[in-house]
Structure formats: structure tokens, C-alpha cells
Length: 370
Image (cartoon, rainbow, N blue to C red; front, top):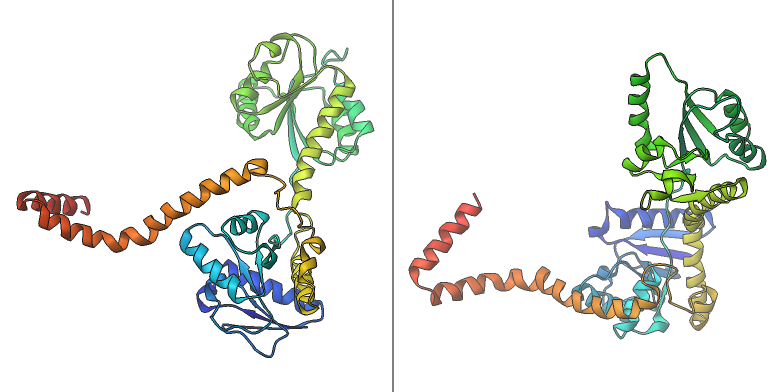
């Protein structure tokens, strides 16, 4: 397929050009011919306008247009014109498709492809801090952490530990895949505590496994706004909203760590498929379906029969969009209409108001403007 990407001159040098270049590179890697220009190309199998402001009145038979955000009625009018001049509009989200449909535009001419990202980012480890020394009889129940390390892969976690007696536990944690930074008690307790206070705000979670009334470190962690994984006993239970993840026994502790890891991993999974290759493949699917005359099948092929978003407004989306349409009108008035009529209003007021008042207003404006 010969794909021509239309990149208007005003869109060069910012995110639209980046998306254009990445899309073109992936299409070429997939074996297709690509050209980029500021005007449509009648010889191409498919023309794709990268920005909906730049669609001319006359377009080639097979063409699509990318629709980004439509956040005022002026942009809505431009999007409407672009959709009427092309075969298919490719929005960036289900919400924009629904917004346009609720504005009266045809659903059959719209689909969406989620944006891609460049990759190369790895999730940082979840930082769990402990600030207690342990004792030979094991009264801090560090054996729970040892068992956790032996039965669970902890490569998603980094432990920062303050206190003495942790050396053997640290070895087991590292074998489980965790990284560990151990601060052993030094000769100057005041200096040790100062360092501890500096580091606590960098914790994601504060962990305490003991059952001996509570940990003073819990107070420090809460003062720093750090979430807690602490036993539901002692003064812990008297701290309003002080326990983020309560636990008592090993099974509950393991469930907490598994839940925290899954929560983080679910965010990673939300974007793991949003590659530039997939972005190009979704566009190719749309274009090939158009060429084959099967655009009616696109919602099913793209898995977009429903426009209910995975997150965000959900069931309240219709009410939100009704409110948004009212807001678009006021935003347009502020952006485009008021600057045009403001000089006329000033001239009218100047004629209607007494000369002394207008002179006073002029002096006030000059003073405000420096």
C-alpha cells in the first residue's frame, strides 16, 4: 500500500510531526511505501491527514483524518468539516468519538486508535522501609519477612532498612530478587535518626511486623505521608486512617505484598501494548478495510462496538458530555468572540460614560499595565 501522510506546515516541530514520523517509519518497516507532504497526493492508495485543521474542501477518494482533542465549538466546527470531507475520522479515544457522535456527527465515519509511546521505561521498584532493630528471640517477627522472601519473588521491591541485626534477613531478601539498602546503627544515635528522617519520605510503604503495642516509626512514616503495612494492634488502631494495609499473620502479609505488586503491574499493563508498531497496524487495518469496501465492519474488527471507556466518567459520561457541550460554547466565546468585540465595547462605553469616568478608567488601565 502507498500511504501518503499529510503534515501541514503549522504542525511541524511538535508532537503531531513526531507522531507522523513514527507512524511513517513503522509503515515502511511493515513493507509499505510512505511519503509525507503538506498537501494530499492523488496517486497514493491512502491519504491520511495528521491534523483535522488542515483538510481542504477537495480531497482524494480514499482519505482519513486524525482527530485530536475538541475542546471548544470552533474546533468542533473544524472537526465536523474535516469528517465531512474524508471517508473516516481516526480519533485518539473513545471519549472523543462519543463526544462527536453526541454532537450529531455520524458514528459510521468514526473510530479511534489509542496513542503510542516510545518505550524504554522500566517501572521502578516499590520501596518498603523498616526502622527497627531486631533481637535474638525474634520478637519483631522478622521470620514473616524471611518466609515471604523464600516463597515469593520480590524482584519488584526495594527494601531500605534502618537498624541492627538484619544481616541474615538481608541475604534472604536479596536471594528472592529484592534489592536492599541496610543502614546499621552507628555510634551516634542522633546522626542515625537524622538520616532516617531524611529517608522516610522516600519510602512508598512503611513496614512493621511486630505485635508489641506499635512502632514509633509508624508515626514518622505517617507524618511524611507514607503508606503503611503494619500490624492492626496497639496504638496503630487508634490512628485515624493510619493503617493502609493491616495484617496479622503471614498469609495476610503475603496477600498485601501480592496486592501491591499487582496494583503497580496493572498500571504497566495498561500501556504495554501501545507501541508504535501496533499504532501503525491499527491504521493499516482501518485503511485496508476502507479499500476493501468493508468500513461497516470496523467497530467489530477494532473491538469498538461499545464506546464506554475503561475508566474516567463511565456511566456518567453522557451527563458529563452534556455539560461539556455547554462549556465548549463559553470557552469559544472567551477565546474567539470577546477579543473581537472588546474594542467595540470600549468605544460604546467611552461615548456613554461621562468624560471624567473614562479618563479615570484610562489612567487605571495604564497604571495596571505598568
